[in-house]
Amino acid sequence: MATQRRTPGSQTSLREANRARIVDAIKKHGGLTQVELAGATGLSPATVSNIVKELSTSGVLHTTQSIRSGRRAQHVTLAHALGLVVGVHFSTRHLRVALADVAHTVVAENHMPLARDHRADNELDKVSLLLNDMLESVDASRDDLLAVGIAVPAPIDRATGTIARSGIMRGWDGVVIAESMERRIKRPVFVDNSANLGALGESRFGAGRGKRNTITLDIGDGIGAGLLLNGQLFRGNHGVAGEFGHTTIRENGPLCRCGNRGCLEALAGGPAILDELRDHLGSLKLGDVVLQAMAGDARCIRAIGDAGRHIGVATANLCNLIDPERVVVGGELARAGEILLGPMRHAVERSIIVNPDLMPDIVQGQLGIRAAALGAVAYAVDCVSITSSGVSY
Image 1 (cartoon, rainbow, N blue to C red):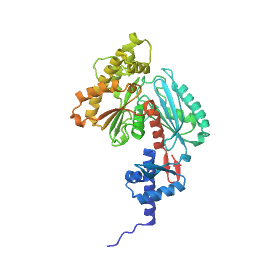
Image 2 (spheres, rainbow, N blue to C red; image 1 turned 90 degrees about the horizontal axis):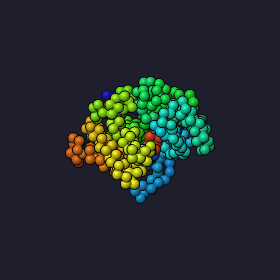
Image 3 (spheres, rainbow, N blue to C red; image 1 turned 120 degrees about the vertical axis):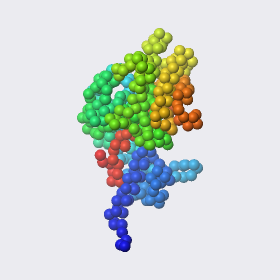
Image 4 (cartoon, rainbow, N blue to C red; image 1 turned 180 degrees about the horizontal axis):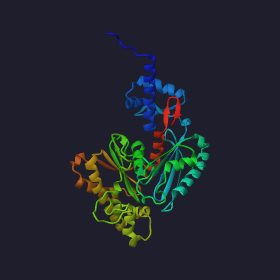
């Protein structure tokens, strides 16, 4: 029987595939030691060392000395000179912009309040102008910009690039957000739901790191969920999975902004909490309610606790469906800590089907209000093709 011989072309293809595995692992994690790279890619330490040396020489990777477990190690990241990316988060009342290199290091950041019913054209113009100032502050230009990730607090129809349900973000209905922003800045733009990108941020840099199956809740004026299943964001058939706040938990309950009745958001979202406390606090914002609760105000503590119980019941239903390792709780209301998490955890314990030793951890997010913007940075890096020869799209 003739023996098959590996041709030089196949060896070249194998080496290129190994380079791609190393670059993709670093893109995903932001930076790893060479030992961690070997574990993440399944390649031998010698192969990793050779490829890292080669790609460092060509300017694709950057290495620094670090200390891990008391031992010297070589930490590997993507080279800063490859370019910059931007993460933008539009919440219902705030805008946050993070400018970072491809190693996910934030080099400039800005945030500002937004009017309640802001319009897409005004706010995209604002981001374009703000981006110019931020690039100038780090001696860079738009030519250095590789991509922009945008997080919005609404489901995105992936087929059309528009918000999937009218009325959720008035002033943004019918706008193809990525195309509209690309016309302004002449760079690639990628858009997703802020709950998804908050989950991506926490999984890469925060409380979900190292977990392959997580639920990340974004609780503030609205309520959303980002689902990480088998290490990948789950967006569903049309890109609108995770609309946790619009699950019905009380039939014929209060009217929700989506037009349905009895949604979780209508009972436990920011506006519902503020309405309950209006006679007590007047026209304060959700952040003020959190501060009052942390200072010991009994009415505010009770209102946040009630919201936590509603959210806990809905979370138990979701846990019964997908069996996550961890539930990460983020968003403005999560700043209340155990005032929210305690009642929520108790409600999950009562309603979840598994024994207590199989219940997922329920923890506070580590990235706070920056989660979606940092997730948008990671999303922008993910959408850029970085190869052994540089960057392409």
